[in-house]
Image (cartoon, rainbow, N blue to C red; front, side, top):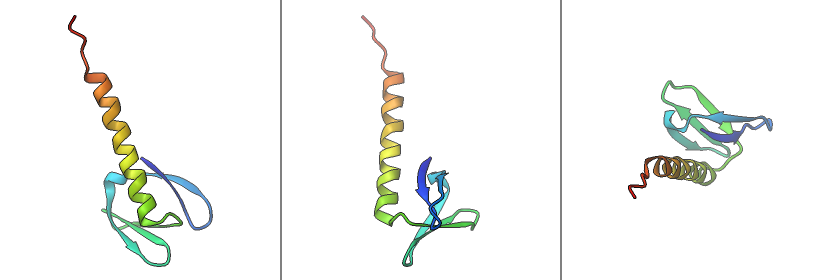
Length: 71
């Protein structure tokens, strides 16, 4: 999940796997697969960076858990 900020300053966590698209109006409008949407202060580039960083962290944890020492 990634942390975003609504226009009113409220922070929330969003399951990025449910994002259908991001519309670039003056703010970023995140449209979810169920057609709900959130208007956030974060720019599309910031949102993409947060998703990329989150996915990298998940991959690192997975890598650490699957390494087996066979000495």
